[in-house]
Length: 291
Ligand code: R5P
Image (cartoon, rainbow, N blue to C red):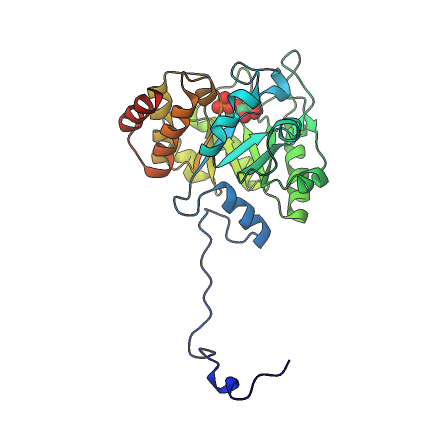
């Protein structure tokens, strides 16, 4: 349709103003494609640069974990407070309402149980299903130093290749398993290998000593797992120290859903992660909300 007479002259092209492009807020992610950045931006809050992922995928190798026996009853009340749900496609399809506004990180590796060698995993989901489920990222276990180290690394690189084709980031989950020496030296090795081989972000455990060297040596964001249940204040201190040492958030499970008050705990974790609240003040918040 032609321009209406006279409107043409009124157009403003700002010919003297160069087009600007905002730098992407996440570490090491500026060269990614638009779809991948958009998905990462649904996991990480663009204002704080951080995320509170709620990890509820434990059942994929250990069955109905304490606190996850009834996800419909125990976990759905936490959903409003999480940035992201990390879970299997089985739980997603059977229990999570499809109208959720939360981003989804799908567990895509599996094939073993606590009864056998845990590192003997394979890819357990086709990328087409991740696309169908509108996943914001896909999580693969990588057992650096484990018996099936090479196989799990290759699982990850295959997922990275498929994810690049579809614009879905891959989250490498490292250092989970039995008998691991969990120190900064090991975590530097494990996280760096995953990043070098293409994972868009990494999940690992926190160690009090030198964790800032782990985040510094990893060119992409790191989120920390919560690990075994501890006292609420201790879990908040761990989350806070990890954030101060450069972590981009938490992917926490048992320390939230096994808490005396999971709804209060996830809000206290949010305060530490997104608002830089001190663990003590966040613990006060926990106690207030618990009542
Ligand atoms: C580990 O492989 C599981 O997939 C969990 O997602 C992970 O361990 C985080 O949960 P938690 O905070 O309970 O350690």
